[in-house]
Image 1 (cartoon, rainbow, N blue to C red):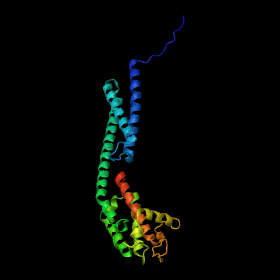
Image 2 (image 1 turned 90 degrees about the vertical axis):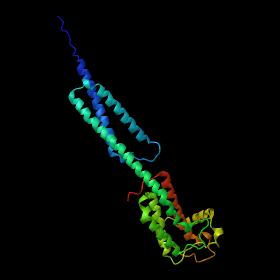
Image 3 (image 1 turned 120 degrees about the vertical axis):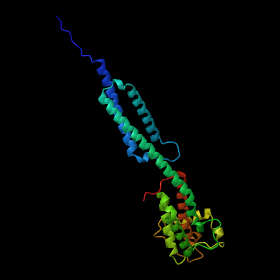
Image 4 (image 1 turned 180 degrees about the horizontal axis):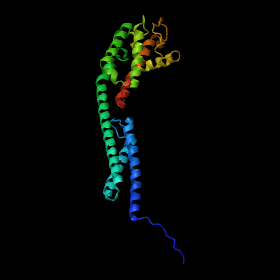
Length: 274
């Protein structure tokens, strides 16, 4: 008599439990990964009043997917063992808490960014106003001299410590200190190589100052504030670029500062961290 080969067959209940256990383990892992990302990456939560970044959208889609999985598992919870139901309950609670923290962080940073932006709109024009003596069009009748340089520096210092220093971005802060340091050194010079208005008005325009700047860059470093030699040109026969070199230098630094302030307002960059 031939012996029958018996094939072990899992019971329906065992198959169901294995299926739910596998799905639960995968769901638990996904939930913990997403939760850790949301809690450990404050950079995700940037509120700039613009369309959500790709990473944010993916995160929200993942959360929706997990919520759907939770709902499905709840519907079938009657068929799950009690220990697995308890674990799922704990994980669902953790995921909900992580989501709440993430949303709250987004709201808090969004409110901070909006507040900083509004404060910049109020205060940045006042900083620009302190550099009016370096204007190319309709400049003051008197030339900028060491005394005027000191007045500009004191106005900038008052603005920085009274209101604006805390809202400057890293880029704007660096441009501010470059100009402030140059103005400080200019205030200590005996004389400056600058135009005299209205006598030299015809020699000063955007186009001509750009030409002077390019000419000076062939021989001088317009980015090295510490090595710049503030002094009168000493000769009326010198090229215009060198006759007005200190004005061109200071005007370049003030123009750079205005550009960085404008970029802050367009991009809503965060203030410097230190």
